[in-house]
Image (cartoon, rainbow, N blue to C red; front, side, top):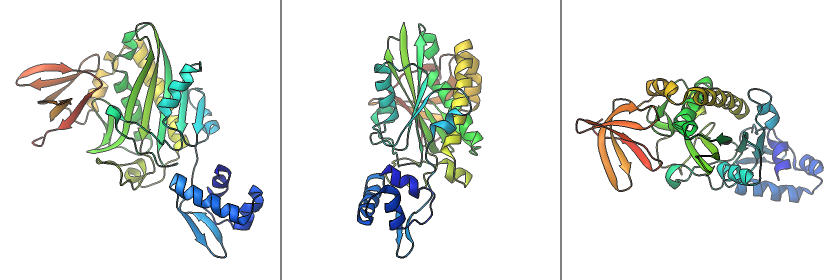
Length: 317
């Protein structure tokens, strides 16, 4: 089926006879595979009598050789379809694969965001990415790491034509009020000794329609007005992550604290911090040297951190 997709990815018309010859199957078998492509991957294929078959839009598939050709020489594995890149990365760690390495996919069938939310993952439109790092003997290397990743994602988006990309504590990248990227970090091992951290990143790249998404969203294509080469984006993301992670490892999160606050879109805003069934109203003062959120609550500064916290703008902000 994927061989057929590679024949069609140029967006041109291909006759059923030519496709059958290339695949060594009958025209009726080609027709069945085309139906399977539409149903399984959600692709739209035009069928015109006398001309053949054509994808509604050309596809630019991920290519590890193009990605690894520039930037840090991290091994990159591309999957056509997978449960989630984070889940695969954790499996690879369990099987002994040496870090650092990158897992990307054309599609996720069980993509996850923070707090167990589903991450919508259409085929070959967006970026589903996980980078695995080995952390040796130091909780300090984990302090503020998700915020460091946010800075790298933001810079990669700006390099890709999204000038308005900014940050929302703790793990989102927005354009105005619309989400364009999310970050999910997962740990395996002993954080006080040796562990691995999976930096999971989802970026809306060329998606233009997504009825399943239950919040305001945007994409690189919607913001820039043109299609984005995801291979170039992955290579740029690798470079930004490599640079920011090195700075973090050398100086801790405190060396990046001011830069993060400068790019926090909700700095000074009135917010509601949701922690389970509890809500805390306050004004955003910034973050501390470990990446925790500083809020002014009832005239008093309070500090909050934790993976299950969610931040929302108050209606009067």
